Image (cartoon, rainbow, N blue to C red; front, side, top):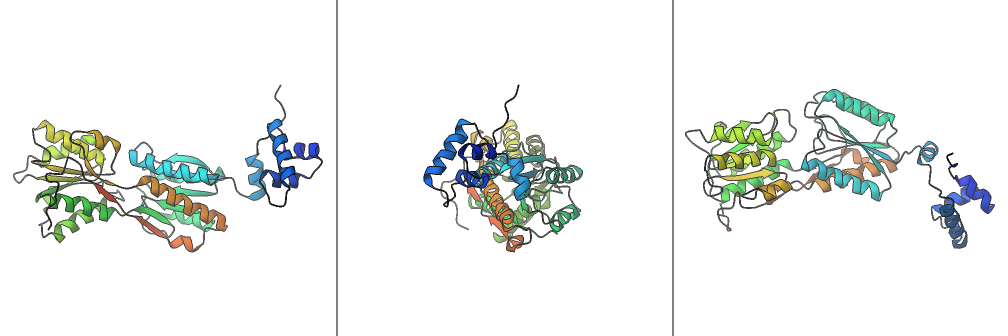
Length: 349
């Protein structure tokens, strides 16, 4: 037979004080004496008291839950973002509910609805690549549900946004290759609908233009899924060209790792003949041979900052605050490794 759960009322009756006094003592309220606090905590421990967060949420209109929706959770970058979210949430006594959309718009809408029905206090979301109509976000904002966008953000909806400066990251990667002496730099471009692909492509082209290197559209290969396999196949295509690339800047580390494998298969030396740089700075990239140069996005910081903004919105009591117009761009960093470093001293342009 199950034992009845201990309540604040049980502790209050044992000590002959009010329920409010017990609640304040457990929360270390300054109006409660040290002696009474010790008595309350001792009895709570003896009776195995555990707070009833569900009942508390009904009284305070706060559930202590944050919803997180992402296109993919399995990727290394996604896992670093989630780590930052969880750590920041735990520090603020929030629990996290996860939802994965697989870049499906209807799944995204269903996940948002499920989060609302679960009573979350606010939602963090990385928008699906295939989301073109953003009305469902506007509907949430009308209901004053705190909403923060991160990494992949909407084009037409106002709201707090936290993301990497993708254009600058791509410029860092491309300029590094140029300073190493490479001149025919190919780009494995992200999917057409990808919200990260466009700024990274712009950064690549901007770096070429800055250093007066002609842009050649034949040096650009469009990815469909941006995977290792695709990086492998597209690199083999590039190396069959009459004017072959002497460097490759890839949309992510997965395609860059595929490019390294393709170059190895046709006996091309990296970085002596072809340099390769990725984007995301995954652990896998650090351990391939040669070790992959890559742009760090600081996913953990993205998760941390986005969560802190969301909690500020929740505490403000409304989604309509000065935070609504905040856009936080985190600065990327290029980690130079064997795959692109022909010289320890880069050529100044």
